[in-house]
Image 1 (tube, rainbow, N blue to C red):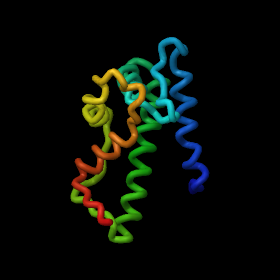
Image 2 (cartoon, rainbow, N blue to C red; image 1 turned 120 degrees about the horizontal axis):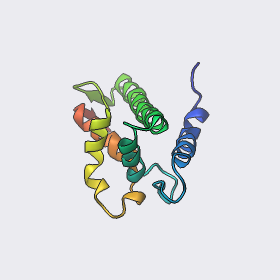
Image 3 (spheres, rainbow, N blue to C red; image 1 turned 45 degrees about the horizontal axis):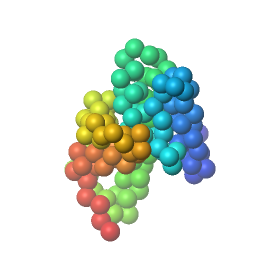
Length: 132
């Protein structure tokens, strides 16, 4: 089954709903004010994933979706000769934790969007060149 562009548009809302239901409202890490998945949320899922099934499922869905979407976009860019990568894209829980480490120590980590940080890290590690 192919995803329509409208399916991808609702993906952040699905993740938000999943992240929101993992813990009681008093303890769950919030999304950013713009509704983006925050660094605090991803770090919370990374911390909980080893022992909590739902956290592991949400984290797997988020990281997999992010990796697949990045791969599709870079493949399209490669076909149009706009992007070239020397290595394969990858995103593990350890790589995600490392990419978010510095932002995770900031007091405003609830307001920092995790997705751009993770995408930039993936592109950097794959040694991708993006052409204008």
